[in-house]
Length: 287
Image (tube, rainbow, N blue to C red):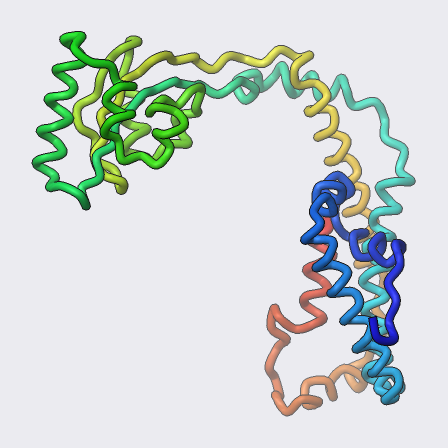
């Protein structure tokens, strides 16, 4: 496009800062590929124009370019530490932590519930409550099922695909009032009274409840060992960064003091948004 060309290796470089596990999913979209290539071509055309105008000869611009390269090299150096560090067998450590903290490793409770929602923008609260109480009595008397009521009356947008039944959900994913009502239902078939949420009033029926259970070691060992491996490598990165930060700094009052006056703000400390502070934060975040 224009004077610019973009090659596959340019895409590789652009995605290099993205976690490797996320790259395939990111690029698996014609729209994203088009947007990425358009961005790279535009950026390169503007850079070509800048060089033709001699903007890259400005000393400050040259330092900006150097510092941008340093950010990239910093990231790759930290990655190199991870890749070149020999990791010991951490399976025993991971298993010891697992056995010591068994309560932290268990599946979540799941429930299957059916519900009918009445939107109070279409009727008064009193009408919604009265209707749901009547339907509750009808269900308890065996005159109708929750699915039939939901299919014919529910204002839940998902009712067309699920007939009001939500299977194997973590109760904590429901809005708080709905979740609290579900927790109070004990036995299969139990019905709530009308429950008010931001969406209106609900009638809820418990269909099943599967308690959480402790994981067995074989179910989580790969994940826990991977976690310990990542922690070990992060510690090695941090140790290397701290070693560099502890090196003696050769500076004098005479060389540093003029910086305070350079931009006309005597005595004002750099904010968290200054380039120097941002670079420092990025190193800490990397660790």
